[in-house]
Length: 319
Image (cartoon, rainbow, N blue to C red; front, side, top):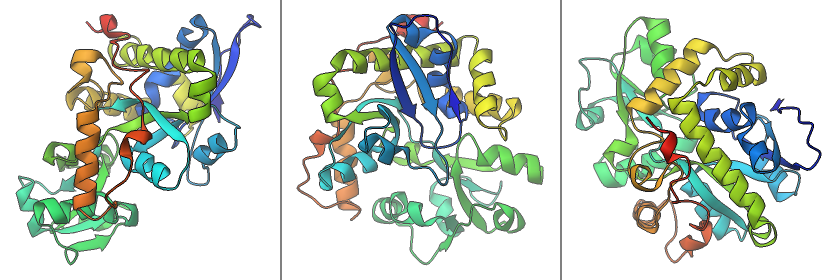
């Protein structure tokens, strides 16, 4: 699925942006800038290509078929450096990683009390953030059970906790089971990675810096407009690209992003949405080395550049 806005201006530069999952509110700022013409204003005709279970848009970028890609967290960026792949993060939309652990009310009222539960954690989570939870906070391998992306075992057993995304699983559980789970954001416990990054190839940065500047600036402006303005046109594009998405899910996700400061917190309050710092990225790298997720000695600063962000672009839109 893709989202485009027809333009009569043949002078616009075609750009393809690949997301890392199906269209949702967590991609809202990008759809906003397509819908309201922000990208077009600086000369780009942007097409958004959705990711999904059988789609690897990052591979398409490596093959030169798309221009920009939505990264997950900084682990992907570090691994690209390790593998010698010249992918560079140029902005970070999420200041906080939206990964959460859910618990039944009364069973775990604090992060520390999650240690008393059996935790449903998927394989990807087990090899990344759960290793950090073990090393940093004393969780155990034994208390983890594989998560099959089905909330039924969690709903049925008060002794279980479950991984999820802030803007998705808590709402799904409440709708299905009729109770609001306790929600613990791993970012608030110290998992300091940025998420939902904008990635591009090193060659694109070297050869077409104006295109990168326009796409980043347009995206950051779009995120301010999406969170704090009229997002109805962007929401329509999201629902058109993902037939399973509904307005109530979008509204919940946006509410969570705003309330929990997923996009607009930390350094973003000072230098704008999309901000990154050496300090935050270096801190996360050291945590992943300490947890055994990454090897030491990596040139982690090669994973990103600060040349295109930290400029307060769009900040004036915020009420």
